[in-house]
Image 1 (cartoon, rainbow, N blue to C red):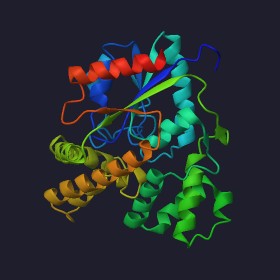
Image 2: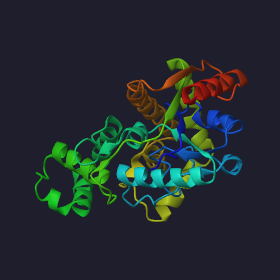
Image 3: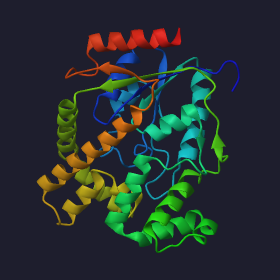
Image 4: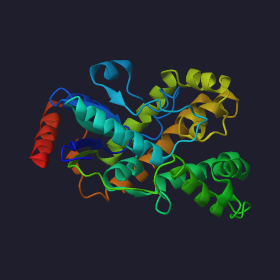
Length: 311
């Protein structure tokens, strides 16, 4: 990028903290387009369970990096960063500012700080997802995916050793986008806000969201995905909400059990997100308490912080 590299502003933090609401409120004050940094929202047809921004939000502000691939297509950090950086240039060419919004810390870090796809892609959230797949589906589907993505690497791995298969698969998926082995740091300025909430409040919001997903049509969404041939062994289909919905649909779990486990797994995911983001000293944390994220006083504070950071 050139000297005209645009600044990036961002709203990050754990799931259900209110990132989308704050971003939409900021969009009424800033000339922005939103870049979504969410590893689940890249999949087409997975809208309700990933809490994708709805049609009204997308009409209000252009959103990018949603619906990039089908659930049965491999998708890597390298692909996401390459797409994000191209999109940033397009947004800047329209005279707008990229507003990065999401909870996938690995995506945010890889975009801003650069990333060594070959050797440094072993992130806690990625490890947790793959480990969950191993628990749900066993080793065989993971071995098959590794052999498809990196047949040469698979030939060098003990395919009976789950730990080595997981490490090899994560590296293969991180580098499967055909990108260079390393992404360099973003050369422009950036300013990141995080939405901080007391743990009890965050968990209350997560529990409410879990129930709202099922009340809002998640079971129908999962039925449609299964009917389209996206089996329960696929990585996106094991994510929180989807795996539980499948177990309810096949009669293994009651609806209440599916909701309860979805909430529990989402709380665990939020803890991992917080661990990741709290390591990033750039993030300015808004103390949201129990306020809605688009509370006028909170939005005013966020606006003031962003302008000061970029001045």
